[in-house]
Amino acid sequence: MPGLKHERLYLAPVVGVDEAGRGPLAGPVVAAAVILPARGVPRGIDDSKKLPAGERERLCRRIRDCAMVGVGIVEAEEIDTLNIYWATMKAMTLAVDQVAAALGCAPGHVLVDGNRLPRWGYAATPIVGGDAQSRSIAAASIVAKHTRDTIMLAHHESYPHYGWASNKGYGCPAHRRALAEHGPSPLHRRSFAPVAQTVLPF
Image 1 (cartoon, one colour):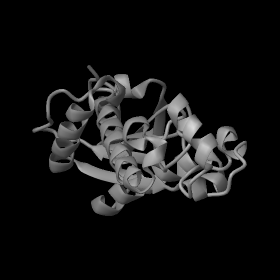
Image 2: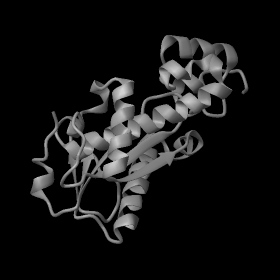
Image 3: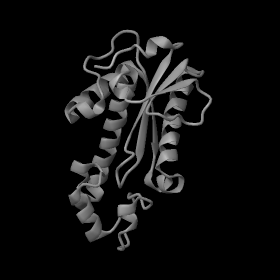
Image 4: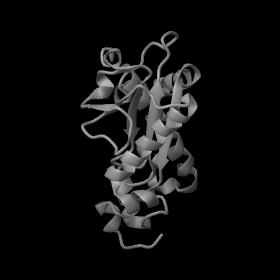
């Protein structure tokens, strides 16, 4: 389980940051930033990919109740304009900016899952595989993943033929078949090759 060894290396408050949704063909990329409290942190926080959906939902609720949380969302249209890398960097920046606004100052340090940092003024460290090492990053991964999944479930109501209730916008075979049959929706990322290769208008 992720611990606090990285958090203890830096000036408090330490923010953990992670994203969800870099790979899907549709929907936003979502980043979350989390400052965990010294006490009252829920048990079971782990890399969101290791947790079932119901547990992510439960933990997301608990994290939001006890921690300081910021969320950044960049929609598909802007992903196409910026590209997915810079859209992800923007989502992370928006999430940390929310936390900084709530604090009234910059956080002491930011821990970011991955090997790159946004172009910002915050003191920060990237950690490859950080969601498996840092409890703050793992908490952010849960919030980001659950938030994005909730968004895609809502969009499924408007575009049920793509199967977003189950695939959350990722390019599984059923989603690709629906994309070929129906063409892209307004929520598809047109800069992504499987979407760009479709010829039907939405």
